[in-house]
Each structure stands twice: as C-alpha cells, then as structure tokens.
Length: 209
Ligand SMILES: CC(C)(COP(=O)(O)OP(=O)(O)OC[C@H]1O[C@@H](n2cnc3c(N)ncnc32)[C@H](O)[C@@H]1OP(=O)(O)O)[C@@H](O)C(=O)NCCC(=O)NCCS
Image: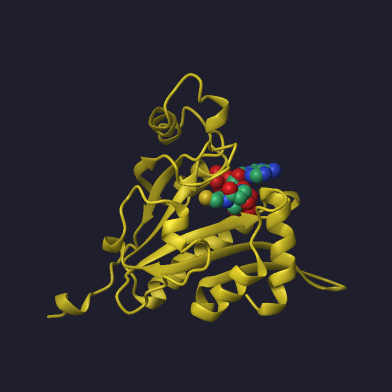
C-alpha cells in the first residue's frame, strides 16, 4: 500500500461498511507509519491508473497481552495500530480484508490471504489470528446461538460469506465472542476468533539448539 492509495481505500470501505463506518485517512496513515509491510492492496491497472479492488490490513501483537474475548477496538487500538509490537509480538493480527463488491469471487481475497501468509513466513512469525465477523448470523439469530451457527458453518451445513471463505484458506476457529464489533447489523457484534499457523513453524530464539 502507498499513501496515494488512501483516498481509494476510504471510498471502498465506505461503500462496503456504510457512510461513516469506513477507514479514515488518519487511521490509514498511521498503519503506513507503524507497519508499512503489513498493509496490502490489490489493484487492477486501468487506463486512468491503478484501481484499488481490495485490501488487507495487519499488525503484529503479543497474543498474551490480550484476552480471547477482546474487541476489534482493543486488538487494533481503535483502528490506529499504535499497539503494533514487532519487538515482542509473534502473532500477525488481521484487522481487515475486503474486496470491492463488484469484483468478488475472482480470487482477490484469496490472493490477499496468500500474501499475508507469505508475510508471516518471511517475518518468522508464529501465526495469524483475527476476528471473523459472522456476516450471516443475523439471518438465524432468532433460532440459534452464535456458537451453534459457527458449528454449523464448520460442519458445512451453512455457508457464512466471511467465515466459510477463511476456513477454506486453512484457518481454524478457536473461539466465538460477542461484542467484537460495534454497530454491525449483519454479525450483531459476534465473531469467530480464527487462527492459521505456517506448516513449518519458525524456530524461536529460545528453542534454537
Ligand atoms: C471475504 C471477502 C474479502 C472475500 O473476497 P473475494 O475476493 O470475493 O474472495 P475470493 O474470490 O478469493 O473467494 C470467495 C469465495 O466465494 C466464491 N464466490 C464465487 N462467486 C462469488 C461471488 N459472486 N461473490 C463472492 N464470492 C463468490 C469463490 O469461489 C470463493 O469460494 P471458496 O472460498 O470456496 O474458494 C469479501 O467477501 C469481502 O470483502 N467481504 C466484506 C468485507 C468483510 O466482511 N471482510 C471480513 C472482515 S472479518
């Protein structure tokens, strides 16, 4: 991601999450200042220049500093990533992945996930963790708990637009939490905490023979 991508990312995120709920310039500038390598964009070249069609935003945290039940705001310092901790942290936290609604189903989200997984391998990190907002939960919330919904998605009995995508990318669910996001009418605030670890785990300094 470059600072010149910021206006397009702001417009794209407003289209996806609604007016007033997209990324701000202040947040995106902060991401670039604290962890430029962790900020990925997918672009489609056009005659008028590159068009941003997707993005993935990440930071590094020390997992033990947090509780599994913490909210998106806790894990991301209210979207500013000022809690980015590459000195102590071994977990890449996925704060965002999004694809332009008119470009979905063409592998852009998968490419962003692959790039994120390569970043973890390159930096020798232990894992990726994130909160997967349960976009389809509002449809069944009157009849089942969020945990039951997640069990159904894992079993392949239901498809969630976000969690099913992440399970296909090799993630596993390590918990289901409420109050993860504010004002999200699709997930009603519920998220699955998801985890991915590289096939060959990094050798940590304390484990070096
Ligand atoms: C989750 C998201 C990033 C996926 O992006 P994407 O570019 O559509 O991803 P891909 O094309 O790589 O894969 C989408 C999957 O849906 C399938 N698909 C097919 N047609 C599709 C369509 N028209 N729209 C969406 N998905 C479609 C793909 O085949 C693929 O299936 P698979 O997971 O079984 O392989 C995207 O849906 C999105 O931006 N959602 C809104 C933002 C969001 O909630 N982000 C997650 C925050 S936790």
